[in-house]
Image (tube, rainbow, N blue to C red):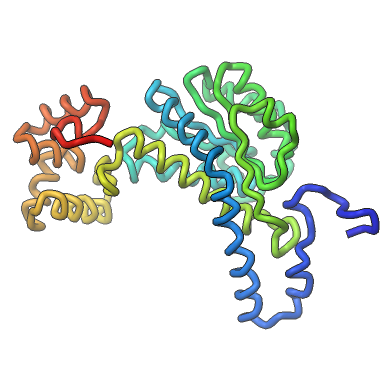
Length: 305
């Protein structure tokens, strides 16, 4: 810090006084220090509960209206957006287009840093145009420092195309961001243990926020029954096992019965539950579920929240 204060006012770029001597610590002390700093993340995310809930609502509205949730980011932020999007189809049986991640520099940037890719707002604008963003979509920019040109270029163009827009950052948002975007989420996790290494606390906060938005939107969209991922579609042995265990618990079946029912349902846990609870065959159960907007309780006659 200079005599006049920090050279950069962004929290993500400031020096953390708690870790100024971290290079002199033994391994256990380093672990303890990082853990102490990580403990600040969850409360910072919790302080943004109302903004996160609003983003969740925007995602849900997009899904119900036939639109998409599209993340845009660079570096770690972009990778986390792509990661969250990629986890939706196996977990909730969604179309891969429903939640998407755009990263500055494209696919190559997922595995190898392309730092200069974040500097061009026109590239961000072009990326949302290529995805055909429109008024049914919700575009959430992720920029922990709050200033990434690629992200702001994408969000500005998305807004011009009629989409709802949001910004997730880990520093104090500029006043114009709250005027420009429909929602701003700003968990203030403080300076990083290693100055500027936003893959640490800021990255953890980002993952927590994205988890909450998509999980909540999937719950609200009928893809969870109780706390079970009933829209699971069997695509591998792990999911076969999980699907069978869900059926065993919910329907009081043994392993063999669950396996046979899941097979008749084409690997769809939700279809299997509807079949067992109503006596319908697989095609009829799928049709009833589609007519009910995927809400299992509406098909089985159980009370909904």
